[in-house]
Image 1 (cartoon, rainbow over the protein chains, first blue to last red):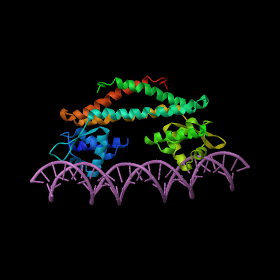
Image 2 (image 1 turned 90 degrees about the horizontal axis):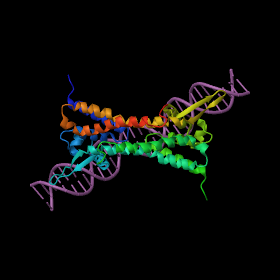
Image 3 (image 1 turned 90 degrees about the vertical axis):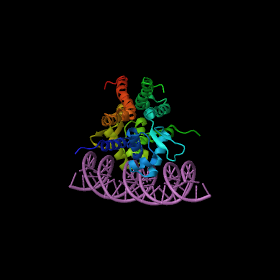
Image 4 (image 1 turned 45 degrees about the vertical axis):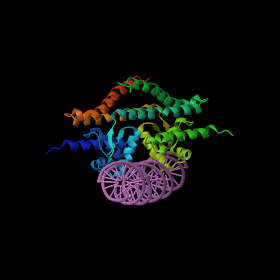
Length: 154
Length: 154
DNA sequence: CCGATGCTTCGGTCGATACTGAAGCCATAG
DNA sequence: CTATGGCTTCAGTATCGACCGAAGCATCGG
């Protein structure tokens, strides 16, 4: 007895959400992202999401707010209709990755200020220097990669 | 009345630990890393760390185990001495960053399997495709950057 | 062999966060 | 203006992880 496509899709959504849960995005937020990436039609109301993902209206509301704020989801309101429509803005996914890389590189500010505190004692600064050099290198390389991205115009 | 270097250093260690706490490393683990990066002499026993960082012996033990396992800290035992010495292995810091980047790129496996589930419905796959393309691009670019790293020999 | 020292393990506590469901609030339709 | 529908806010609950400190265990010196 074969498993339906929709069943496999919801399993996929669950794995998707689980991954981002490890990165600090609430489970329900991750489910919304996964669902909005593959649902047909592409737009959903909060109530529909609540039913489809079996989450309380409160959780859906909180997480939608978070995702809209992050730019990953767009809210569309229509005159004469109370329910707003939500859809994914997949083009903003690049911002998510950008933020991740920025966070990685930002350690450099810490290592730099640490190096300043160590000035005058090169012996003692050696260990920190190794780490600082690494982040400095990252900070010079990664932006260059970003430039080379196809359609980095936006 | 000026603030001593050691006082400023411990403030720096605290900021350092706070940063990594946001990335999931326990506060005490981050403090150990920061401390071992700048302490003189470079090696410390668990008891010394416990006293210096004002953390319980249990927490120090747990976190040292974690850090040694991650390769960031090295344990050195000596005959005729019960207390082991711990020091930072700053050269392994590159592994930490490597793992971070791998985790980022690993989303691609998710988007790929999602795309497979969507085969036969290109219309519906469009949103996911945008995201998948992005991670595919990342997966091809980042390893190349790594190759260019100074002394990427090891 | 025995005492001392130092690390590890483990139960218990505390704080943080996700989630729920109900109450409140706003907007729309009649 | 009132009733309805829909989202948001919020208090309460449950879960999870970090942390502590004591008990247990291994190791070393005498």
